[in-house]
Each structure stands twice: as C-alpha cells, then as structure tokens.
Length: 70
Image (cartoon, rainbow, N blue to C red):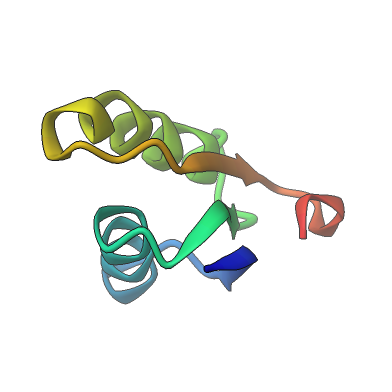
C-alpha cells in the first residue's frame, strides 16, 4: 500500500479517481487539489470521507486549494 496518492483537479474524473482510490484502499492518504471556489476540493473530500465507513475504508482524505497537501 502506498503512503499517499495525490490528484490535481476534482472534476468528474478527478472525483471518481479519489473515490476509487479510497474504495480500493490504494493508499493510506489521498489528497485532492482544486482551485475552484468555494472550497470545492474540501467539500468533495468530506463527502467521500463521510461515506467511507459504508464501504469499509479507513483511508484519510484531504482536499485543499493549496499544493502543500501533496
């Protein structure tokens, strides 16, 4: 298992990539960076994180406008 996977761009494809990385437990941490306001990446990651117990995943998801989460 990887330590972290980072995705830049949280549109339709980026959001699916983050969701699949969490569902398949490909890494311990998944980061999403997107500059779209208002806090688009954080909201998408919050949605995925809140649904992760349903799919049995304990992957940490973090979204930001800044590249330092990578």
